[in-house]
Image 1 (cartoon, helix red, strand yellow):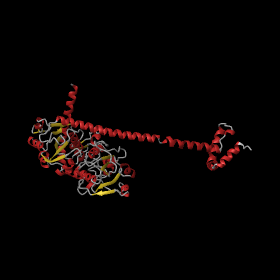
Image 2 (cartoon, helix red, strand yellow):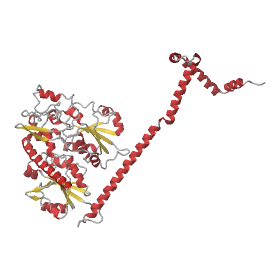
Image 3 (cartoon, helix red, strand yellow):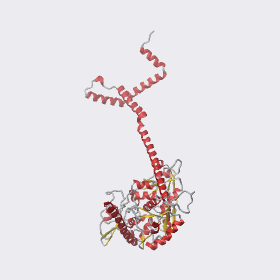
Image 4 (cartoon, helix red, strand yellow):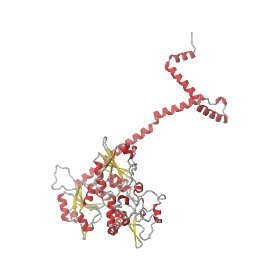
Amino acid sequence: MKRSPGEDCSSSSFSNPFMSLALSIREYFLVTLTTHPFVSNSVSKINTLLLYVNVPEKSLLTNEEFVLSSTAVVVTLIIYYVLFGKRHRRKRKVLAEELRAAQRQVHVLEEQLFNAKIEDIMASTPTRKNSSSQQPRQIRIFMDGAFDVMHYGHMNAFRLGRSLGTYLIVGVNSDESITECKGPPLMNDEERMTMVKGCKFVDEVVPNCPYIMTSDYLDYIFETYDVDYVVHGDDPCIVDGKDVYASAKRLGRYRSIPRTEGVSTTEIVGRMLLMTKHHHMRHKLRGRGNSVGSLSGLSITGGGAAAVVGGGMGVGDEGNSSDDSDNEIHNDDEEDDELSVFTASQYNDGERIVIGNQSKFLTTSMMLRLFSAGVKPPGEGMRVIYVDGAFDMFHCGHVRFLEEAAKRGDYLIVGIHGDSLVNKRRGSNLPLMNLHERVLSVLGCKYVNDVLIDAPLAITQEMIASLKISEVVHGTESDDIGAIDERYKCPRELEILTAIKSPIDFKLVNILARIQKKQAELQRKIERKKKAEREWFNNKYDQKVQNGSK
């Protein structure tokens, strides 16, 4: 007996248990969804719209058709995502890997270029008498200076000096010789030595160098330290009408480097002399008497860091908070919150005297790269230590703390807070150094492996995972005030927060106290120095303009 096609299909379906299960699921799926209120309401609204545009009733949508078409669309999207949806992500991953490979290649080429430059220097340098042919050839460079209130300009000079050879020796002038020639320095011998030793461009430090170099002392340096070249800035160094480095020049063992323009100790001290917000150039300066207050009005002893972070009050504001000018200064909501501009000034018999100008140092990506030379990501399994802060007026207290923090792991990352964040927490005219200046200062420290620019105040779990942080460290001495619970809440909960005793009790407030003590002397000195710097600057660029016009 013959079976009809329908009977064959039906019998084959029921004979296959998997097919029967699939049909049962399909029927259940269709019955459940087609009877769902949402489907019925949606189909009703769609059909109402179709009838409105004169679609025949026989062509209207049924619940089953709506469910099947919607299911087809969803399944199609899922299949597309599975097959093609991750294509862009894979492409980004490939591009990221290519970028990392290119960066590695850049580092290789930079090292090759550096080695080629060293070979050129070695080829042009006479062999020293006492040098052994078995030992690697070194080109030894000597630089000297006071390095009082050391800053990134000094570090850049060290970088430039070392680029002329392979080994940099830095002589640090003694307190006695500096005092004899130009008055006592703000920092003592030990503090200045700590700063120079902590610079990653310096290989060796010679203490107690005389402020005025003599021919005999230069001969001593050449013989004792096997120095090939003495290096100094391109500004003249004349004492009693004589060139200090005349003997080295006669021997052909003198090299000059360009001065780091836009920064000087004089200009930085000028920023500290007047602790108001006027120098942010937010408000119109008024020449009423001594309206721009000075450090003499700042209570430092007994007040600690609180005197520096006085809630945005300028010096001289204390006790006069009802003054209209103070109210104007506190009205920060109407102003830009990016505080990186510095112009400190005072009035003398109605004449405005500029002491500290806006920072004219131009931080380029090239400068950041030069200071970041040799920076590599942490290797697999390395213990990463993270510290953060303002690091304003990078000083010996910072250097000693970073040295101790670096001992706790294999890789030290320093987070540097932005200008707005620092000013909000410390007030007054802080930070004295803008973000770019502070980044370069920290990058120049030999104990630091990398920096996080404009780091967030609160350390988050995502940040810890991204930077692969093993331990978060903070010291016991800080210029910040207030509780740190919220700032370190996450690392504390993860039990990776450690407080270490700061090696020395040195803070920004110590520098300010010393400046306050000798303010009048410093102001006179700054006026003389700035006049000399302007003359040097004008002469240098007038000559360039004249030479270019020939």
